[in-house]
Image (cartoon, rainbow, N blue to C red):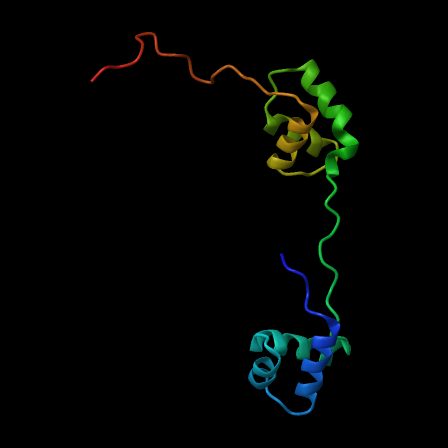
Length: 128
C-alpha cells in the first residue's frame, strides 16, 4: 500500500472545490482521481478535516499470550490437528483463524504430523 497524499495537496484540492470547482475539474488540475477529490471534499464537509487517516494498525497476534498453552498441548497430545487447537483456544475465550494457529505453530518450530485418515490400499497402486 502506498503512502497517503500530502496534507498540502489535500488542502489545495478541497479549497478548490469549496471555491466552486467540480470533482473532475479539481482532480484534473491537481493530478488526482475525481473520486479521490470527491472523497476528500465529502470528508471535509462532514468533519472539517481533510488529513489522511492513520494507516496500518495493531498487527500483533492474539496468540502471543497462548504460545505456552499451545506448545504444552501439542507436546501432550501430538496427534492434535490445528482445528483441534483452534477449538481448544475458543474454549479458553480466544477466537482466532486456522491460519493464525498455523503461523503460531510454525513460529514455535513445531510440526504437526498425523497418520493418513484413510488406510493405504492393500493392493498397491492401480495400473492402467
